[in-house]
Length: 277
Length: 161
View 1 (cartoon, rainbow over the protein chains, first blue to last red):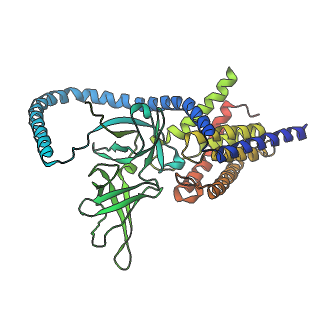
View 2 (view 1 turned 180 degrees about the horizontal axis):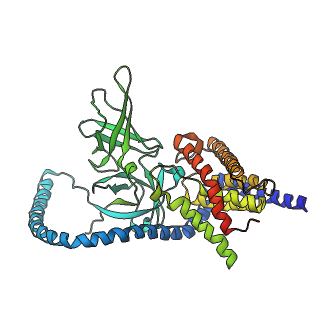
View 3 (view 1 turned 135 degrees about the vertical axis):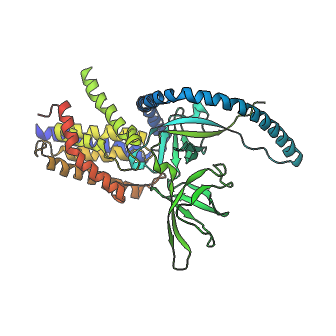
């Protein structure tokens, strides 16, 4: 009886192992991808629901506190609205003037963007520094390589990552700490561009630093204007460690990204604005 | 119906525990592996067949939700469930030390399988095993420490006699 049970155990084990190996070997084929997509579509709604429920529970408490102070803020804001509406009018005049001048000089127009806010639904501890899955996808207009930002505790938008894979209702975001990520950056008090690379760890590594650059611990790193994904001057993090060679050359400069200093559950994806003609 | 709930409920709870909650409770990648704890628990209490099937189902789910090489978790957790199941009724599974030692064995088996798989199939999204850095080792320790507690909680829901 035990022998028979052992035989059936071993038979099922071999079948499961073979099936797993087939999944690994044929993971890039359409059939396996379709199977993965199907299970993914079944699982994600329940995970999304749970994730949203957790996020909303936290929000209820903060909403209550905010409602109390909202009334006072409302009075102040009304006064500001009057002031700002006048400034907006001035601004619109300036924009029109700017467009006219650009047209005269044949300069390209500034890129217009719109923001899609998304919740992080999955952040796997084993791939903590590599990527997350968000609850917005192709349906919301997301495409690959779009910049993803988060708003820090001071209300400043900082770099988080870029969209690496898009599904119908969800998307994978490759974090800047991913070893496959690299961004052209500049140090706030320097004029030269450097390359900031992910290393699958808490810190980012700064490379291609000119020898004459005078870096200091605490210097802020921001995106450069020649970055292909991000706009100019978006904060990324701060330098936390500088190692130099005996020849006074930079051997390793570590940057702690701002998103590593706080818990993040919501991010913003920047989409190019669709022009309405 | 009751059986379906008995299977589905822990499945959903574990997925939430492993994939949704980390972003609320952790700032780093230090986090215990609840799925492997559950696979070990089932294997020890229900035997090889249940252990390997549970390992496969949870591993497959992990693969679907992960950016890792598709199929590696299904393979490693099936192996883990199969070997852990061999100790069913052979050891005093209620002893914390036995649970910790078996969990360590499971972690070593899965990590060796992962290292081997990553060696033959490099991953596009970065290869990482728990023993490869400091945080990974802390996660291993956390998993080992929490195993007896997790088993105690599961004992309330499962008939393990």
